[in-house]
Image (cartoon, rainbow, N blue to C red; front, side, top):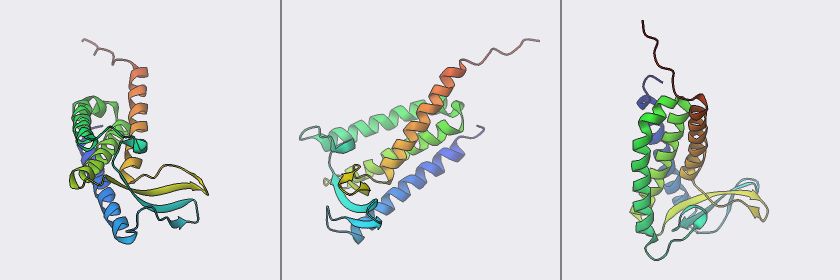
Length: 167
């Protein structure tokens, strides 16, 4: 990939914008927490929720907001350090990294803005069999992590590049 920044930055920024915009829109449209609003029959619903914990509402004690903010900043720093390696892995890696970074940044903004937690609202399932409630940032992180894993696995399988032939 010749210029990974031309893919990374617009994609990460678009994900943060889509995430923040959708969260504010759902808070305005469905201000009652926990009340589902059908979008696609009973399969997809918008159900406003505030997640103060980590993924799947995992909790880390009384200082979890600050722990999760620090952890997210550390993860973003780690991703920044991986940027060069991922950029050499090609398009899927750059897209994956942009989605993970953009999603992490979107949820970080929620944690910084309010002690209520991260706004979640996408509720998928059938009847009482529901998946966890998530948001656009969470979807970006999940898809991005899969793309990153694929890119890194593909890079590991390819092995190191052969040395250039001497003339």
